Amino acid sequence: MVLEALIFDVDGTLADTERDGHRLAFNAAFCEFGLGWDWDVALYGKLLEVTGGKERIRYYVSHFCADFVKPKDFDDLVVALHKAKTRHYVELLERGGIPLRNGVKRLLGEARDAGFRLAIATTTTPENVTALLRHTLAGEPGDWFEVIAAGDIVSAKKPAPDIYFWALDKLKLDADRCLALEDSENGLKASVGAGLRTVVTVNDYTLGHAFPCAVAVLSDLGEPGQPFRSFGAEAASQEYVDLELLRRWHAAS
Ligand code: XBP
Ligand code: MG
Image (cartoon, rainbow, N blue to C red; front, side, top):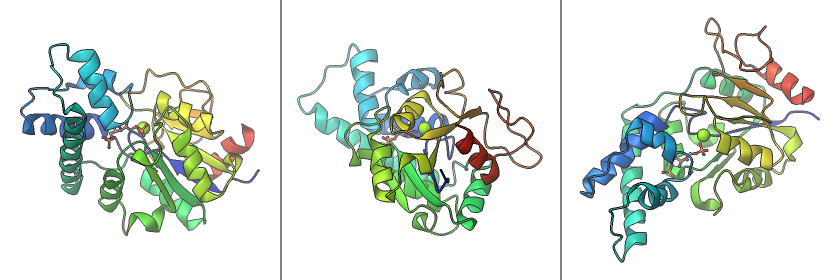
């Protein structure tokens, strides 16, 4: 089957956004609301088990915040907190706070030039995706990505496959003509659950995750002179991921 489209996760895959991006924005929102909550780097790693910012706040309150007495309007508080968090996060991106990961810009350029169709499937809020892409790629996000599937457009977030099914539906493509790029166990469960062959590029938070069904597990996409490390038997002969390598992995799996 011919490979026609690449579907990218955002957080951890396009850019290392969690530790020094989302985490800081959550903390800034908690501070603004006078809550005295502080998510340090290690705690945030545990909280990442739950995808979605609003869902993560609720998980924190129920599992790590025994003393907190929920106000009657707790649901509204979560929504307001998350809105403030999104504002802080977008401001951080607008200050150029987070670059794309190694090899991402190169591969996106190569794919676009070759006429590949590009899509995004992410749990994060749409404004966050727009801000990241506007500040890291030339032009508008829509010049790069034909479909942007993000946030609450599906109610079941990753590891549920729904966001990938949504993207595939908009692309009007079968899963076997696409390849997904992910960074986490939850992300891989979602993409594989939608029938997608998936390449994983890990980061500090996801290095220890299990990736049983990935077609390749790599440190990053690599660049000429900055080779990726492979955590499987895949293509150690090549130092960076290009379309040719993706086609090969796609055909072999
Ligand atoms: C991303 C997430 C998101 C972000 C925060 O997961 O889990 O929750 O951390 O985004 P994935 P929001 O990379 O698997 O899509 O606060 O905007 O929800
Ligand atoms: Mg991710």
